[in-house]
Length: 207
Image (cartoon, rainbow, N blue to C red; front, side, top):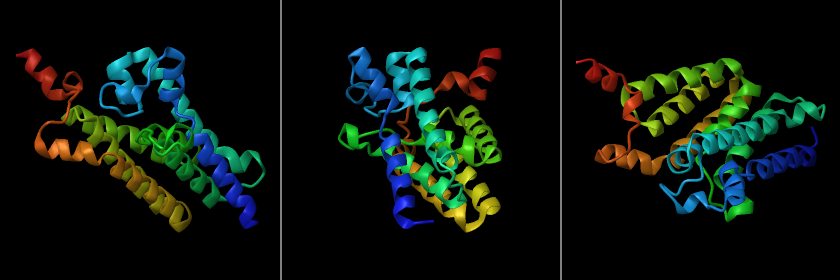
């Protein structure tokens, strides 16, 4: 494929990723999600500060743009596998560093999920299952997201080879880096937990 054309797809995917669900919908509500709660422009902070309906709408937007970004080459009749992965990665970069919002965005997990819908349903299933297991075991959303991102990237690397694996690994690395403050808080024992979803919580309630 022509390098200029491929670059155009990647730039378009980045711009699509820069459309932040929480910031766009927050503007309609009159709130900047980065000024409340943890300050992160993502679904978890939206849930904690704005409620489940707002958070659901945010997640739908962020997943949708990830899927659309990964699908861009295909719907334009340029179905190179590596380019679809590159566009999904570019959308994650856009979500984390949105050009429309001063390069302050979210952590990229929902956008990666959207990409997986198109790129690898099997890796998507592995992402969701591993995230659920870790969340039930620990109550830490950050740890479940990190684990799931790495698991899905490893599976893609094994199934798609260098074409998809490189971009998947880069996506997982970005998501891990975005959670560095969560990692620090987990190590310090100060990270927030969703205790009510953990197995330990329900076992204690039965006593």
